Image (cartoon, rainbow, N blue to C red):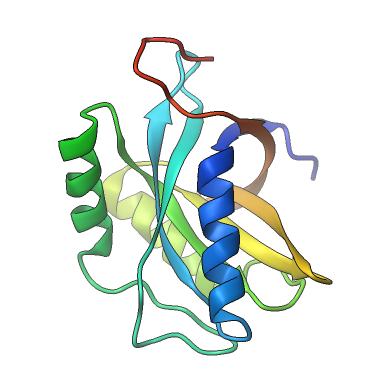
Length: 158
């Protein structure tokens, strides 16, 4: 299935994910994606917050309870435009979302009546690729990533 849904990924958010993934390797790292919706109602990931977890290993990462809420509240204190847009975690190998990843995001979408993103930083050789998925009609579907700059202080949005 082709990735036709677009998601903007800020370069600083991508760099933060890569730094956290590299620092945790060979264990998984993870956290929260913060951003805005564009005028076309598409997600723009502006920040990626790394959230330490006692439940992280070489094949799993579990976001601690309330991490989404805490990260979103802190972001809104800095910039009221920002909000929760999804979760991220790393895979120390080049593998896509697990069954647990899919089930977690679909359950979150149902509970919040939202379309959260899941970004998996997949290790390919010495670098990480950004595999972004979005919950659409009860399924986790690939999205096309468009690299972008920061949000800035104005009202300029794609």
